[in-house]
Length: 198
Image 1 (cartoon, helix red, strand yellow):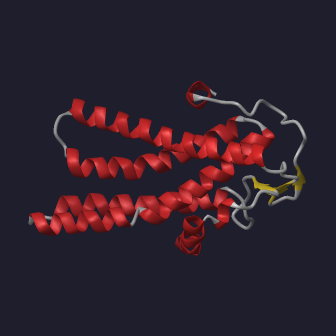
Image 2 (spheres, rainbow, N blue to C red):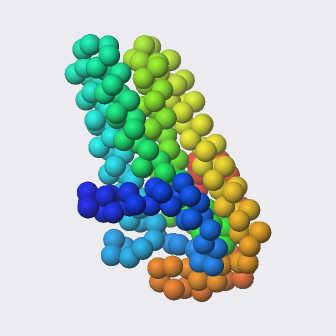
């Protein structure tokens, strides 16, 4: 698993340069671990975030001096840069896939994972400033982080849908080389209701 996570670290410069967002002729679906697609990056993001969150929690618990605690927290938050960048790429490809193929329960599950992947770093960052005060304050902070993560995903989703409408429609769905239909099988439109209840 760690080897898979480390192979995706070379994508970060391509995301920052915009190279990965300039391929418009194909869309990417799920796929097994031995194929390209969305499953392998999702598992890699999950593993990287688990280790970064565990490191963050451990550094907060064992750090006594204030300056050392701040240094540990900042180091752990820097460990979230690669998973967040991969999540943006994952969200981009998933949104393009949904825009041309329509929604299904498994694709909506992918959207939920993308929002969760964006929520975890936001919650850790907010935890630095809020701390463990009252349950009400922690719940409000978690709700705010979840709302911000949803808005971040919807921003990427809107940009991906605009790229579909502004460029020639993709013809191939990778990794299985399936042709993309001219009309989606199901409605490609979804919102908060579908994410929560679908």
